[in-house]
Image (tube, rainbow, N blue to C red; front, side, top):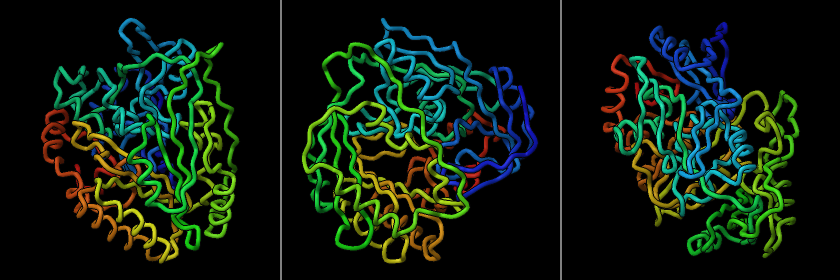
Length: 441
């Protein structure tokens, strides 16, 4: 195991940061040793640093990163499962699975996340309305708890602990491995239909009745005559076999470090206009799975475009019937000059049994906003209250500023989660900046 002097860690949005001692663990024994010797600042696992806010930071404490190794994936084709170390990335997993004719049923919007992080955040993809979130496809988790003991958790064996860990943001223990369900793959192409809509209500109506397994909409939220226009991508798995199955996305183009924010409202409006004009009005086409599922991965370190101050992503889920809140929120942001630089809309299906899982049946809107407008914190606090009033919630894996009061309203099963957390971590060894801010620890 290796360790470092206190290191400044940030989320992907780079708007928050704190100092922690970072240990790289190469075995479960390393993990147990760190947990049993954790100081007052506590300990937290960190994957690949793609949580946008402060969920993978632990100010004044210890952060553990897990070395994934190179030869530990164990595919059982007969059972349709793969055993994988928690530190392995979705990118590595896809490269090995696809070559053998398999894939993950649920994939987040970036392949550069760890398996342990995907489980801890209960990530979702473009097919939640059909296939649910990541945790639904986890058969078993290996967890080192607050006593340093390794547990095997599954929906059948200790389901309370399993579902508290799925979506539990790393606060029930350190996930060291997982058994995931996989499904057969015959093609690395996705059959996609792309359509344009002039109004947000129109794209919502189209998504309500969409028969496709996958769908996602880009929304223009810049003020002016283009506000609300949207480009909807719907997709199904291609059923004609490839000559050779290969997951080989292009290497990301690196974004250089920038000292200033280049994602200004004028740039956003220009980009939105170009994106709208290049989108077909109605087109059926084949798209490589890497491009369809992970479009932003083509630009490495793209969060640097927001400069030193970074950006916030405000991602909300609201139930069916609360659609008006989506447009009202976007207009309120524009009114104070916080022009959203990227807005993505998806539809959610049934919720997970996990108490802290984000999705609720309805809609999710992800909004990227550069840090800067002076009234932004107050507005987001007010919008949080409106989301809570509607029965919605803010995504913990993206959050950097929600209040504990709003959190407790949005996640009404938090006390159920706390009772299980206390059983798994009776000494309160696991902590994070997010957990302290939301008064989870």
